[in-house]
Length: 251
Image (cartoon, rainbow, N blue to C red; front, side):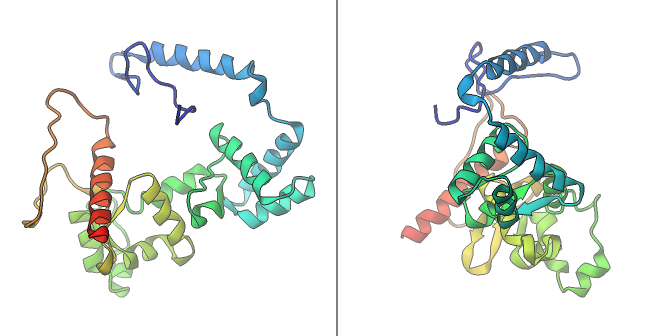
């Protein structure tokens, strides 16, 4: 199984558990499944964590009182103080903590590998600087204007296209690379036209919108026979646009 950490709805042959908060539909099944998985996890010896790893985790999470994240160099110093050495071993520990939901650590790019998130709210706060309703949750427009980014802001929240300059403004130069890679990896953002440093953020698009005519290949998705959970269609858009960009590069 490529994703062993994902629990599938085998009884309905689905990848998800349909629920309805209004009438409670599906809630009991989810609760029962969680209890069964939690019980199974406690009796699997290969999943046990050593006491040294527990101390390592405690020392990392102690920093949450004053920091939202730690750079990998700081984590290495913490590991060294309790006898855990070597980048590979430390990354394995961080991956275990990540899989158990104790912190957030992604390792697919250099920018992601260098950040260990110990306060998930920090991720939410920064991602919501881009994925938001710009007409309701407004940025400091005077500051945006002083940076010469008014058109960039309008394009982001009205058309779903954003620029490197705007992303650097909302995230800061220090964290731009991290959040850019994070949104790429989670399919919340993809490159539109690399030469223009444009990115598509589908989740910003409104239900009804108008795009310019494109004299290229087009396709239609038909979901009349089923439905997609919220957010999945936007991720499909990112996959298609990213795939299209790769094909253009190959040609």
